[in-house]
Amino acid sequence: DPYLIAFYDKKEMQLSHQSGKDIVFTMEVDPTGNGDWMEYASYTVKAGETFRQELPAAFQARWIRFRTNEETKATAQLTYK
Image (cartoon, rainbow, N blue to C red; front, side):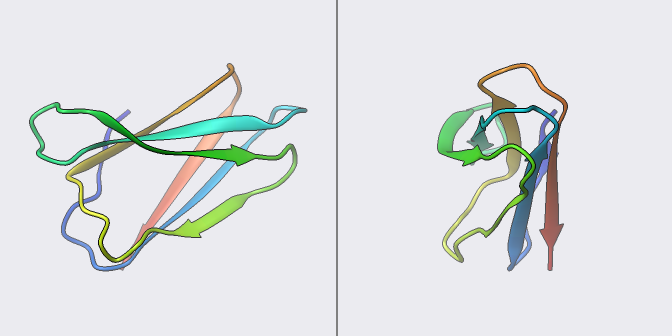
């Protein structure tokens, strides 16, 4: 599901899943807010671990969403300041 990410200075994400193997999360962004989705980055999250990253200050998008390379129960947690 898309999530609004615009208008915050500091953005951090945490990605995790419940699979017994590594899962690749692909971050997709819509920079215009008009449904112009594009791949921004991919992150491999190891089984049993949480991947954390602060997004760069230059990161700009209106909406964000994630997809995984395999079916799993996954969490993408975003913190904005």
